[in-house]
Image (cartoon, rainbow, N blue to C red; front, side, top):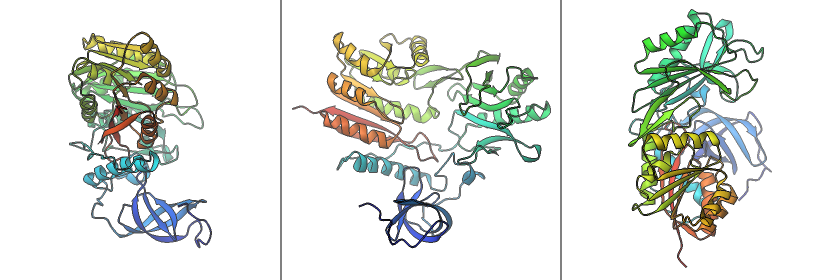
Length: 462
């Protein structure tokens, strides 16, 4: 039933009260006032709240929480002092057990409302043993603040204003240490931060990457100029302050753009990469490499994909959207043959290096569009027993869904980072002769609204 806009007696800035009945896909509280839906960030299901209407649109409104009149028993105090301003986390005010419940419900809601499924069993969300300090990759902006302060941290919500952050509670501690050392180096040597509007200054962003299994640490300084005074001193300071520090890379980005990385990089000290492991596999990680930001939970995610595929060393597996080949290589250990398809040339290059470094000979990688390459494989007589999908947030291209249906694999294992696109793609696959056997949510991003899922689908026998 659609919301009606007639006879609602409130406008922008109205102070209203509401019973929160659930959480939206971005973690905001959802409820109705006089039958009109409001989304209120910071509110939790089951709470009675007071809020100010900030936007009133035709079919819904957005509010700003002012008071929690009846709090949820799952409400907790956020540990981060800039939690409300930052926006990088959305669920620190919800207990971790509550977060896992909410994320499972997100998947259920998407499958039912968007995919039109009924009675699909969704397993309990696989949680993180430690839901703090899990991110192995950091990218933080640098700016000159008011009165000459130096701010390194995060953008305030929906702005380009940088909030200074001394410690991010979801970053690996070594990444926080990198930011602290860069801050000290810039102050000591008077290295100016980028002034975005004036387009002057030197330091734009700081990146940190941590090899969780190896303990290796990389820092990347993204600069507005190829020439950076005292950059070798920064390398020395990082090496002295951070155990496991291995390499410093400078990336140059002189463009007036929101894109963080530029096209040119140079190694200041060390080899220019670090290594990390997931399960028994080891990967080289350069500044540009894709690698799951939560190594420990990625191992669980890939383990679930492997479990869903249930390989017996006789199958041919095709990994569509294979990226740098992480899942492909996991599958290759249990399959007769694993083939990864990816349209990004640099990712295929990394995938082939990863296969060689891990001595996996039964994995091959194809550069191209999966909608084109899947039928080609079939024409060459290569029958895919299992197809694995790990698409971007937008989900699968319709042509890829059609190509999968034409190839007719016995199983499809869908690794999803977005319940909405998962629901849409699963409905399309079911219309083409598949059914859902199992849905397993996995929490790769504690304290945020994001949830991953592994979905096993099988061909319906006529």
